[in-house]
Length: 140
Figure 1 (cartoon, rainbow, N blue to C red):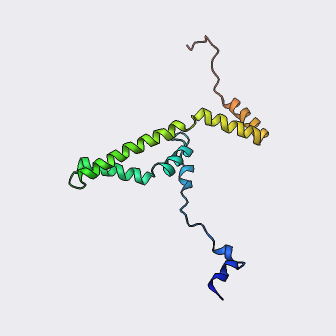
Figure 2 (figure 1 turned 135 degrees about the vertical axis):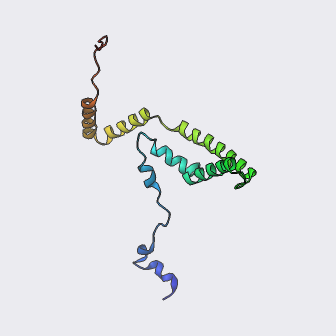
Figure 3 (figure 1 turned 180 degrees about the vertical axis):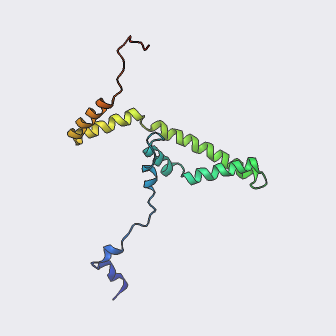
């Protein structure tokens, strides 16, 4: 059998696999109060990974704490790269929707895709809403 015939084999699909690392699970584990997982993923993919950021921070810190362990030129370059990364991260964050905007968008999508689930969610939110005292009412 010629080596290229395996391409036409009925079992070819068994050997076709994606070997790219799957890192999307990281962002799904970000608690909602800790940050926006979608924004974190965009920063990780388009600006700098956590490892890259930590590596640069380590180089700058070592340049300050133990100048003999890392050259001042490398520490300075790392600091400049960190400043650039910070500016790029702020640009990504500025383009991200605020929490209320994101919630409103998701609610609109839910209302369009599953009106019954939307109605149930609105009912549950109304039931969970804290009861505020009437205007002008004082404690005490």
